[in-house]
Every structure is written in structure tokens, then in C-alpha cells.
Length: 116
Image 1 (tube, helix red, strand yellow):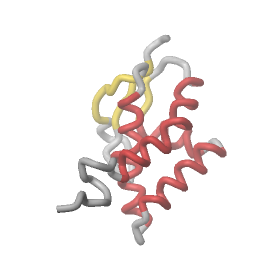
Image 2 (cartoon, one colour):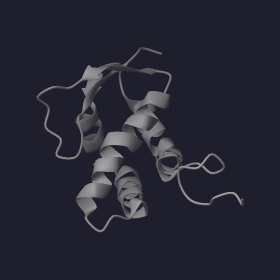
Image 3 (spheres, one colour):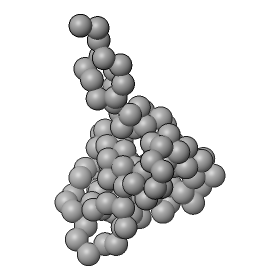
Image 4 (cartoon, one colour):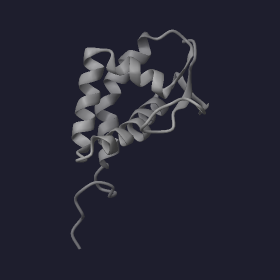
């Protein structure tokens, strides 16, 4: 049987992984400029889209996910892609779910940026 092509198989990374790789440089640049602090995923996304390069990367990631209903694409970006990139950054620590923090697309988390 020939190897399957597409997302989620063992041979190729899935689209979430590809979008994480795509967004990692701009997210890393923003994190590198932050002072040590705690912030929520929602706070970070607001900061991300307030910069021209962050807004461009966010919009491109939403477009690449490709759902007809843009809300569904944003759910993946907010709930999987951006948190996935944040988890990969050694200076960041996941600090729990941000209960009561509004995000219409995902359950936000608290993140702690350690002093470098």
C-alpha cells in the first residue's frame, strides 16, 4: 500500500505542526522582547495581532487552515497552534488554565516568562 499523503500521517507533519513552524519565528521574536511576567494566551494574541508582522502571520495561519467558517480556523489557531508554539519556548512555562478569561475561540491559559 502506498504511503498516504495529507495531514496527520506519520510521514508528513500535519497542518497544525506546519502552522506552528510557520508562526514560531514571529512568536519567538515577540516573546524575546517581553519582560519576565505572567500573561494569558488571550493577552499574547492581542499583542501578536497589534504588530504588523504578527497580524500578517496570524491572518496567514487562519487562511492556511482554510475553513469556510473563519471562526473554526481561529479555534485551531487560538487553541492549538499558538499554545503549541508557546509550549516549545524554553523560557516559557504553562501556568494553568485562565478561568474566567474570555476568548471566543479557545480556553486560554496562563504563561509565565522566566528571567533570562
